[in-house]
Image (cartoon, rainbow, N blue to C red):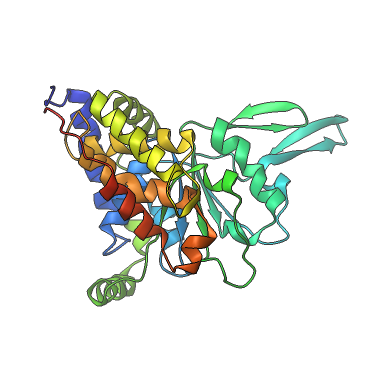
Length: 322
């Protein structure tokens, strides 16, 4: 099996390390989250970050936009935000007597949908077409989103004041769901010291271009996957659909998302081929938010993490020749 990275793949690896280094200037002690967000971008997906306010979700998005040289917009989702705020709208120009299109906030390279679960279902749904297809239709006219197009959505934990569950169709559009969590004491001390002397986000340098990201995604697509790994992913997906505690298992879209994240993981680990460990590494982040658990799980106090651990343990890990 191939083991040597091409020149283009080595360039992607070096580029990724540069991006991680820059973002780490402002997101301290959360290296794993930075890596997983970058993996999601290389895999061509959108990211959902679920956490309490104030842990750095917005700062992470801004730092990424600067390091990746991407146009960036943020929309605070509140109950009064309308679908047209997301997609844009047409307005009559009184001088020309023609309707002119005014872009919505979502038409940018990196769109931060902040606290997405505080707005109405109708406004949430306005993101669906552009997230899935990279385009938006207003008044019968379709407009493409910039390339690359990335959505980072944040949501407060369910049960917070003013929140409502995202529908399954919306959750399935995100390649991963991540949680940042509180910083450690050491990380928080470092953060406090950094805040004294400068505005940290201003220290982030642009190290790649939008075209670099497009090229990197192409290299991820070319990562080799053995038949045993394809079958391993399919068996894991089947196990979610037959599990005693799962009401709705992994969809085919979710299976494809797992494959894409697995390929990106392999490349960032310096390989041009996938091994089962790459699948295991990405599994929880890709799969957990797509699961709907039944009443048996709730009655028995079974968590989603426990169910996924059980699934990983129940499916035999294949041997792949390297």
